[in-house]
Image (cartoon, rainbow, N blue to C red; front, side, top):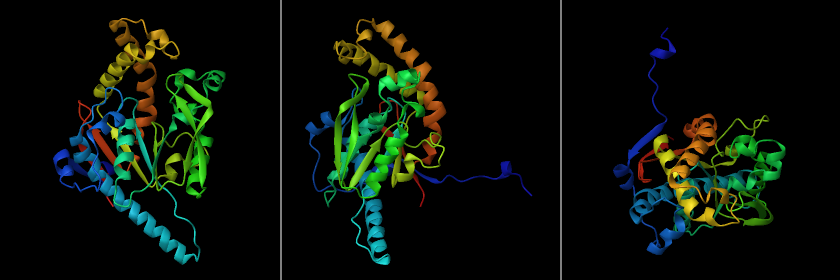
Length: 314
């Protein structure tokens, strides 16, 4: 009998170069305006119309196929079980490292999906709101592990997703302030019967944070991992830290105001230290191992633009 090492395993993914992927392009019934770009991309994450047309419009049309099949299955299930349950939201999870550009991907996808022919109602939720408040993290002595699996109120996140998938008409989501670096105790986001819900966060594909076998990704109908070489992510993280030091950190209300007066060299050193002590371990221990659990992987090049797309075979 041949050993396992003698077997050649084929990939469960189809691989597309950017040029191959863009040729799958479809047409949206409404165009995105140039002024929308500033509202869609995050700090230091360039976004162009070419990126939207080459990457996100084909992705939206692929997701349209999945959403249609999801709704068709729901309809046929209603017939089979002789019931008349309302249709449920199609949930998309978006994962990836800190600073890789998940928030831009999530916002662009929210916009592009909303422009599909049937004009679905698309809502976006980030998992930052499901972090434990700082006082609880301090109590547990894990403030320096913010973003690691144990820093999230996973029970609350799972309950939110269960409420959405059970058809609850209105569900509230806690909000997070990057200025205060904390969950806002008195502010909530109301989610009311979306057709599509996008859930974005570094932790959403992890499977090692619960002992009862129920995971956040169990509620996803499609999942996306935003990927890049670590050297590029580190560079983006350091550049973003420096940009924030010169802008948002100057605000005396900012949690990170203590970094406002660093020199450029000190800022670089501090960003590198934070990356090495917190973000890099989290990436290698918890985030990167989930990459191939995704249905689709967007691989970025050094300039933040997608250069390759991997799609799980069906």
